[in-house]
Length: 92
Image 1: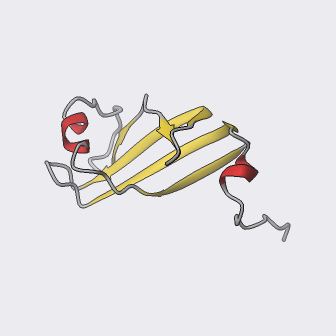
Image 2: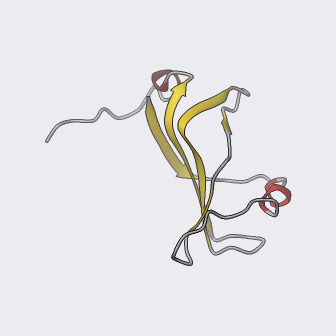
């Protein structure tokens, strides 16, 4: 099981979906978080994430300044298959 996060680079079709998303209620103005999403590999394989998939948005509006996606608790496909060049964690 693993966690992955990084900059989200939306396609032009994302704007249509973005308007249907409801932000998760939080006590700060930024970033805004959206949950209840799913993630797929470029080959069309869905990532099964026990902790869910979330999108953080800075800036808002039709063209946010920055978007970051987080996939928490990746169970399937196996993390090692998805990220063959991942960095190993080391004890300090």
